[in-house]
Amino acid sequence: MARKERTQSVSFLSKPTGFEMDMDNLSVSSSSDDDNDETVHSQSGFFKSFPQGGAQRPLINFVKNKWETRASRPRSTSTSSAASLDWYRVPGLGFIASIVMAPKFRRYMVVYAILLMFAFTGWETVLQPMMKEHEDILASLNVDTLEKVGGWFGTNVRPEFVDVLPMRTLNPALLPSFEEKKGRSSRRLVIVGDVHGCQDELEKLLEKVSFDPDAGDHLILTGDMINKGPKSGGVVDLARGLGASCVRGNHEDRILLERSDMKVHHSESSNQEHTVVADTAERRVAKSLTDEQVAYLQDCPVILKVGQIKDMGEVAVVHGGLVPGVPLERQELSSVMSMRTIDLDTHVPSASKDGVPWFKLYNQYHKLLVAGQGQAGTVSPQTMTVIYGHDAAKSLNIRQYTKGLDSGCVYGRKLSAFVIEDGGKNEIVQVKCNEYVKS
Ligand SMILES: [Mn+2]
Image 1 (tube, rainbow, N blue to C red):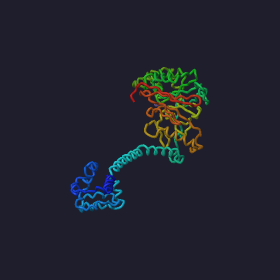
Image 2: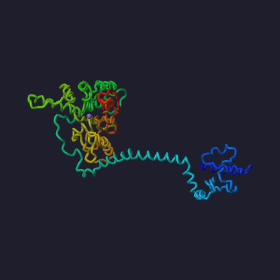
Image 3: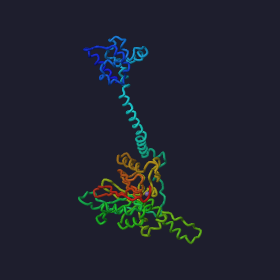
Image 4: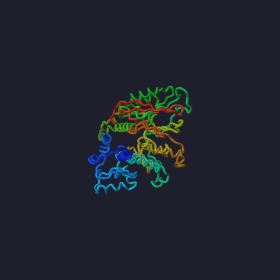
């Protein structure tokens, strides 16, 4: 508005010809204000809407100097408002005032305020926590903190496990070759996440990748192939039939425990004092498995050492995860089957969903290792890529050194396969699943 007013006053001054001022009209234009500036030129007389109070003043009073940006509109000759207009006459201040009072400026201020608010909220809720977590992870891998907490996980004695196979190395003849070949890969590894008894979906997925053991394909299951879903026995039979490799998941562990528990109870059944154990869903699954199926599950190691894969380095398959910097031989087995998060002070893993995910520490550890900033001397400089399942909440989760494949098939989401071909080429293949369990 202020700018417009100025141009008006200029045009008024630059019209010396036909300059006839009707003093009466000038005096009745008292209603003129900011709002009917638009109507100025459409009205018969330009001076009609000229500010009030001019009637009693000599015309020379309307002549402006250039610096009087705002004073082109003397609203009233009364002393009170004349005094309030004085500040416009301070050089510079009038210019600033005209900017601040412009509606466009105020509109922009509102937009800027909203943008600023969004930026602040984003910083507070997303960026800052992310940076904090990253800093904490870096501090966690700093050797200086090792002494403070009295040693990290893996430096203490590992508990004994009975009836559990800790580790196995995959037959190297099954590994894809380092050289890429034309046409179909001569050897492929098809690694499938948590199946949980979803036999139909597993069959669909194998069909989708044209799985053929005779053509050099090998299937690896990342554990939790049984329980929850409808066909636990069927999945085990399918895996056995294909000569698939597997690792022990927390569900295999539980069902196998139920199974051996059942045996103990069975042998003690003559003892009348022993209470009858309730027929839980897990016990029903344990009962439903044949001895052959149980033998197959019993033979699944907790850690499957896959070997060297082009562009991936050393690869291992587990169900839950691995603690970085701890040799495979020293990993604690129940944690390997169940970990989701890790304590940043002590590096003790946990099945809890609350905390820093283990794979974040694991990836950062390897990045430092590769960058030559790791704890040289305490661990092998070799990297280890982990392919795992277990974490349906995080779903498919592919990172540089960790590949999470549990995409929640049994909850009606997807079953995922990580397919590695000759030359280290790899891809994810998925199929949709029926919902067997509400998540
Ligand atoms: Mn699991």
